[in-house]
Length: 460
Ligand SMILES: Nc1ncnc2c1ncn2[C@@H]1O[C@H](COP(=O)(O)OP(=O)(O)OP(=O)(O)O)[C@@H](O)[C@H]1O
Ligand SMILES: O=C(O)[C@H](O)COP(=O)(O)O
Image (tube, rainbow, N blue to C red):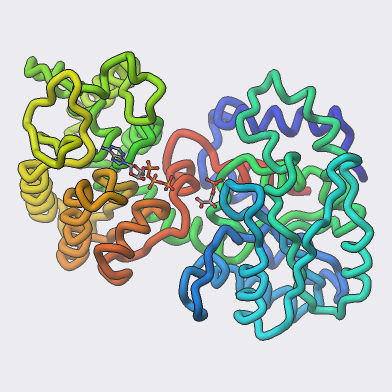
């Protein structure tokens, strides 16, 4: 049954509202409402299944290089092949609409041991109709075939929800309904989401399910949520770092769940916590350029309301017996370290005293909580892409190994944190690295994972 514009409007308003639409639902409420792949087991051979794939990958020269997200889809794709489904994979790569999935399609073929054709231009954006070549290719394909559609972000319709507010939705609903109905009619009305890392409001992730007869969560994504993520929900230690200041919302949510005993905050976002602690302890701290309103458009700018939020987080956390560890010195633009920042100083990394402080704090954590504790790490400690500012991150990664060797289960959120582990450590230095950053913080933090909201809505 095609989805009407009115139904699509209600659907998308729910997606945009996130937690506000269902404040009493937690991660496990969404997971228990979402059908799993096995619910599709009886679909007959030849059924066309639209698979939202985790295709944002840069495969290297050989299998195993740069293709962890593609390898994560193999079990689901093989499950469909064994049942004779014709699986059409769609999804995004990067944020440049011109990027192509051609290398991704080739690597998926190598992983499955079969030809995986890619359809380059599959949507007429003017009329929002799926081009005839798609249905022709599907009809001509054998049972068990796997086909890839070119980068969904090539088309504006994929991106229109990214920054949409609830008031924007009515104007988008008609086109989103048309696009979704086209997918259902011209490709297939069964949808599997096997894109654990696809945490943004792409139409392929959060809108297309509205027009589907059946939806399900793929094997890998389900396994990540049912296994490692459940462990992280009960984390004893959380490390928040990087530049996204909205991670304070996720920190607040993790603390509210009650298992956290220790917070390490580092990188740019930690400046809010450092300032807050300074104010709470009557030892004022200057954030230098990061608190100069002239810089309020910069991602590293720390607005006053975030300092106020940080003060509330620390005050509440301390009452719950939580220890907060934050940097005590900084590396500034010329690569030198400073304890106190002057008005024009911008901090790009934590300094040597902070490295020592974090090292000692890890020792205390191990002594106090050690074996059986769970540590979750997200982000990086500085602008590590520049060797001048990699010192803090480079010194921190071995601390993860130290905790694991002391019996702590150590989980790393993907994104830059995962990249830093690859750069300065080894995969077995930690218990598990997620293939995604934003999705994990959503799942553990303040907002639901958008595609889980969509799958719950689409479950019939
Ligand atoms: N003090 C700093 N000054 C400037 N940039 C910083 C600083 N600390 C960290 N960064 C930058 O933060 C970025 C990563 O921050 P972000 O919050 O996006 O991490 P992430 O959450 O791991 O990423 P993802 O969302 O992909 O998982 C890095 O690119 C790094 O350059
Ligand atoms: O690389 C990722 O984190 C995912 O593919 C999501 O990408 P996005 O942040 O561009 O939506």
